[in-house]
Length: 593
Image 1: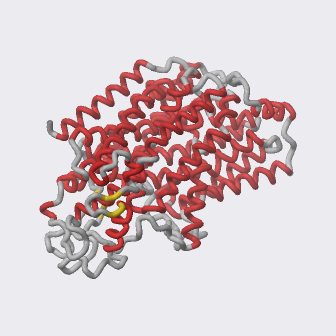
Image 2: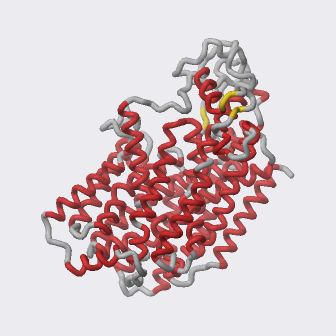
Image 3: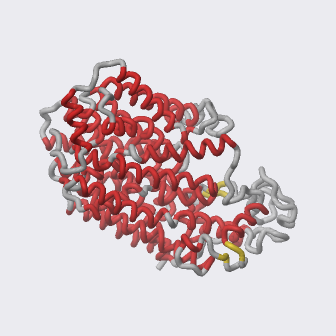
């Protein structure tokens, strides 16, 4: 069967499955829409959380960043994994026991303040919209390639699909849809990795193949990759940039990802769906198991894909050899060029594709013709995982399976984010702040309407994202780290933080972090409006925008404690409520909604 129709068959089949589940699990009440009726089994919730967590950034973009940035990109793995452990141990059980439907509801009730609830809604919407831009970027990449349409058209199609099943099913429908999406994405990620590991090293386990012998050279795979990159003038794959500022930025970036993860509202609300407090811990453990399957495979996928690309362009090695003739390039080059995400240019007119680092020092023996600069002028890292089966010349059904997995990853997280946004607006803004007497059905309409608006905004911004999918997502983590995480931690573990301190802290963290990001990424991400380059050398404080969130969090904590210390003490009944939340038994009833 033609590859295009095979893609349509497998991707279309997966979409029909998601939509059927959404119809079967259609939410009929606000409790089902916001928290799936609090009846989800811990294993089911763990699987759904894993799908919610492993977004387009994880599935599509992370391995691409590792492939082209090497050791430096391991910060994504360390930060995201560490942050999830932080969330599971530090916050999830306590927030479940509190019994809220949403994160702003917890903040509003804990800090006995309507202003705190509204500020939390603002922070949640900004962080979630930034996050969902990254997901829509991934959706556009996946749809454009496998449906053979432009990137923009692919984004519009993806937005329509996610809008349909997220609006229809709410949290209940999204939960069961995410279980199906997890199954699809984990097969899609690991099956091609196993094939490629067998091809290159003979080892079927990718994580072990990464440290095995590369069969073509008889040398360790990573040593072969490092030598190839050195010959072409690129940085070593496994070496760390030891410059003090580079090390500092990597540390701060990892820290920002960790605390940002623990403050992500769309992940936190998943723990509100289980029946008991102990189930929140259990589901967190199961989610870690399911996430580990993919995260332990990602470094191997990145390294092996990079080596395959190098071998494709330099089929006889880099010493005294010539690059591949452009007419002999594999079909995947042409396929991805049509999406606008890959580009080549024969600068010296020799009919071959030279790929090396023109800013580095390629080997003197490189090639036999005059070099005029790198001729692989565009390779968007977001395409790497999706293109990986084609690069390794795997069967057509594997290519289609990866396409379905990439779309499942992007759609599952986008749906979770849209639900977090709509819940905050309909429940915390409309129901709890503007019109407390609103009926359940009217509240559901508000939820679905706000979700529709969020889809439109995310689609528009997804057409001009401020970076690759994983980089855009990293900005969202910074905003969550600077605003929501400190408020949650102080809300659970400090009786002294009062309403004024919490609001002051969140606003300080939000303004500082967002302004710093806009100064480096452009105001509202509009190209050309940035004031500083987003590089270590050119940035305002020598800190890149993706790593600034931890400073925003620090400011949040400091301002909250200082202001609380100079204003009225927390009421006794609120202190008693905090003490009760910390007792790890029983689940408090849901607060009014």
